[in-house]
Image (tube, rainbow, N blue to C red):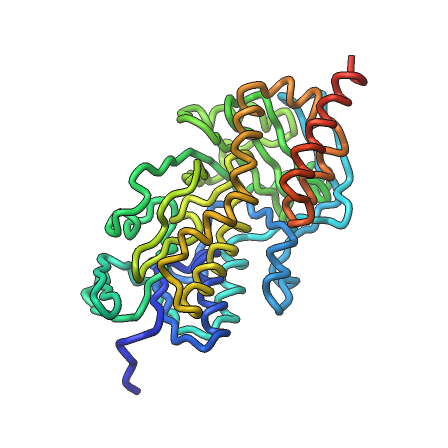
Length: 373
């Protein structure tokens, strides 16, 4: 059988954004080719906390790849002064990214070639020309670059020149049974031990995903802080494999496309500046990119993402700056308020407006000033 050398869309990268774009485009009848540099499915360093709103964008079940549905969230300040609040409706699910991304891709009507790196992309008058590291020349009408935080294609296209990358470190750890049982139904966030960031413990099927991320500035002691702080929770991580990765934190609107090419997911810098969560925005950007292609409005893609970011990301910029400049006050008078958790759960799942969350958090802070010693 002779393979076609021309597609409607070539997608570079098979992460959450690339796989989602392949699915949405395939459903619209487009001929799609997905190119992924690694062999699939592949491990992806990521906390793997996915807001339930993401699953509602797809008509198929994610039950086969959901590891846990936490019922509680725990907040801690340097291992102490912890509070534990219920997560009504279990708004966040825990996944392993290799299985999650692959699950979406398996539902996509697309040709997939793994172990194939996109080396160069060139726009022409009537399409795009893609050259792989192996020397293959491929053609399409459009390209979606979903090749991650260090997107080579973004650089080639003259986009995201001023991108800001921050660091994170994660381990997949199988603890003692008693520790596993303690966190089996809870997600933990620790603040105060790291400037401009936090640590986390997320439960998976048979282990814990444990990590640390710095959302502003640069950090060189992430591993040392993670080792020290996790001992407070009974986790000894010295002999566990480490995975470092970067997060392209959102800092404001910018051009994310050309006439025939678009950036999606981490390549577009769509990571929450407060929490570092990016899966939800990756999937939404993929849907916007697919819609732009289907409707023939690719040049308007950047504006569509900017509108989305104004409602879902831009408000968090102010909160992130406030929180990371005054972490103790925000923790003491805001985070420890149960209603703050309820507000953020609604925000993650698209059930809270920008005005509601801002007003609600202000009220939480004022309540904390009145009630706490």
